Image 1 (cartoon, rainbow, N blue to C red):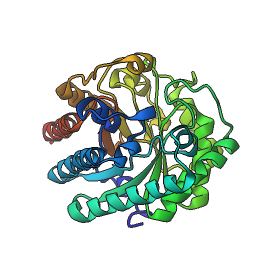
Image 2: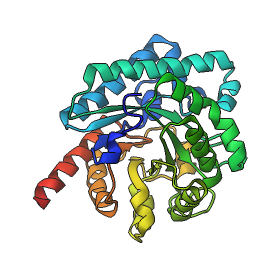
Image 3: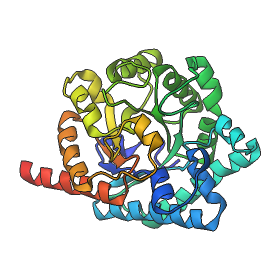
Image 4: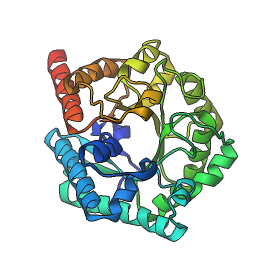
Length: 318
């Protein structure tokens, strides 16, 4: 609970997030992930070593660039519904959450510096499909469903929780309310389609404003993830006060649609250098942007190029 009451990214500390953990494990490490559940990789030595190597790489990248590191737990698919489909009972699932938080605490102890604060972030995924939900929860239903993970993360010492790849506002509202009840900071990250709208069809602006209106602005901030910068840059260019609530970006390397990514049998890792350059443009549209990482298809190369592009931009401005 080191940073629970003072998240450094809320004080203009520039932070890194990691990249596409699941795509790295599947396509680069050759590890099978049923239901895209990264935590399943922790059941064998190869998976443990791969995730450890992956996270250490980002920790070193953050320290080298004098940026903080938002350390995500590999729990995007570790909510009760998905665990049940994987044959994992509640006690075992709870142990997964305890162990991943403890592992990240050890990583923080090893790498953190005064210039690079490390934050333990409990990751929560959507109740339904992260690209095309077929079952829509009310805010109350979402709170009842997601409180299990939120409470575990709060109890085991995570600094914050993040709901990643959210596809509609009501589920996000429920998660914010669960986190508020558990007294832990919460971040909501929406995904968008190639037209810049959520899979629900709503605009990013309306989704953010709906969550804030329903929760009195209780979310620490918002993010965008699992979409290429070209898919949402035009939305941000429209401007407005709502963009001030966006502090984080975790974009895809690929310009493919969600449907195309779902069917892809090979990794599309895009162009890492271009990825960094595109984030220069996005940063100019988001004055409160403090957290940058990657999502599907990205790895250390992509985030490293984001750091280089940010440095080049700062030098040019100076």
